[in-house]
Image (cartoon, rainbow, N blue to C red; front, top):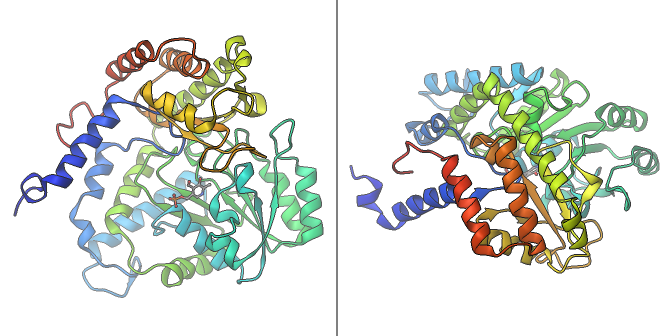
Length: 418
Ligand code: PLP
């Protein structure tokens, strides 16, 4: 039985080089993180061999006695961590979790009201060519032009006028906390189900540093790989009332066999998420984002046309508006890449540039917090970002500063090979 180096050197090289890239650069894509080695181990385990359609104790395949244990542990940990009545841990991804949620809560043709993609919503909340936009009748609420915030009075007005079947609260690019109590009130007023997609901020919720949507929502979906820092995958929490519908919407509604190796890795990540270390990491995540938002509002940044949407952040990311800057989103992303920092360009509301270019950036701190960054390191990286965006220093100097940070906070230091 050959190792990957012997069997497939082409792919082995990709793994090696990707590890080196992750170690060398500063990862600031808001939706990314670094999983602990225990997660890599579970995900790279023999559990990948097992078919287990069904749920623990109710499988359609034999030999599920061990994977049943792993899935039940993941379910119990998810319920405990977020205070949920029911958890389904089988979704392959955030998008497939969301497809299952809509499958459970509505029928094709029903009305779904979510945050517009152009204003920070996710594809699965109603984008035209996504399953959500194709199967459901979409109404979108937006952020306000001056403040960049969601105005709950307008959300209510829209809900009353449109009478949606489902309201989704959640985002991929927004920097403030949502008012879950108000969303609940509006959903009740119009007789809609309330679905919260906490994919981005679930880690903050687990750490008690962000309001928990579970007590307010009928259904809460999430990914496990963003702030939670687990394997790429999704999960659904809900009240007992929706439990059966959610389970059957996931399997057999959306999926066949669950990925048992990923479910075991989810269980590991959920154990980590209940720890004190995890709380500390989430606190550093928030602190880092605040430091960056502040630095990007200093005089030199303002003078270069760099603006911070909503004037700051309460979460793990900062949204930068470059409409008045010399750089567009693509150029800013490329320049930061040259300086050794990975971010993604992001459309700003009413963006004058096309989606492939954009006029904004989304900068996130979860991965660097996992790497051990605290206030000192985030202050340094914030300065490097500001100088890169304003042209305040040459790129060689900036690259040396990011390299020094990467060296000071090594990643997977004792992992010789992928
Ligand atoms: N929901 C939200 C709010 C997201 O930001 C994302 C990912 O970007 C998803 C769902 C989808 O997750 P995945 O990429 O795992 O399908």
